[in-house]
Image 1 (cartoon, rainbow, N blue to C red):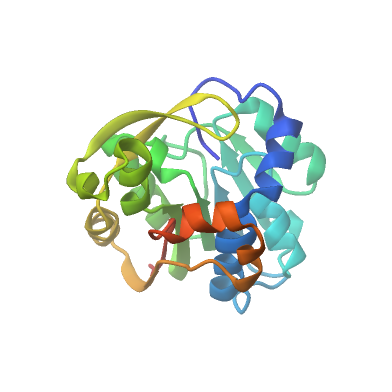
Image 2: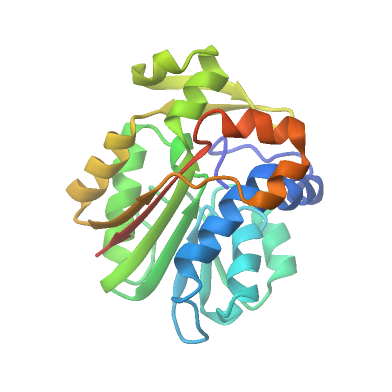
Length: 236
């Protein structure tokens, strides 16, 4: 999670509890991570969690076969990062933005996960982050990105999916009650920038809500009218 570039969320534990139990995580994002990465995870692979926040995706990776000691978490939010460190003390951490020139080993990592982060970055930061990912991965290494689907976000911002093509910065209210920047991009922008950075696209997915999500009728209705998330798997 990489929000405001400087400010914290205010209560890392409260945010973490919300994030772990959120509808989109339980019924869209986590199933997509599982379907796309379960076969890749083992005790030996080296992983970067880019924008690790309080450690939600680190927890998923460890529970599904990765070694905590082989995970590097990067986040700009010190409060969330400290919370992740307490939960997963064997992992390694860098407190900085994924778009900066970081002291990360080049051609070293097997997998980078980037979950709900890239939409917080402006165009320069976005392009640089993707170039960083390419540099940090070893040959044939994988990048797996999940981001809010721009069609869904056009509906959230404008209540009009016809505004999908309106690129740019917006301030949106988060589920934890803050205003945060959101940069609207097209699906093609994500794909094209990955290709420019050097990646080959393996798979593009608009993950659907799993069956269990239908139990929450209100949330299911909200998130099933348009694709809520965009997931992209790419290879160096």
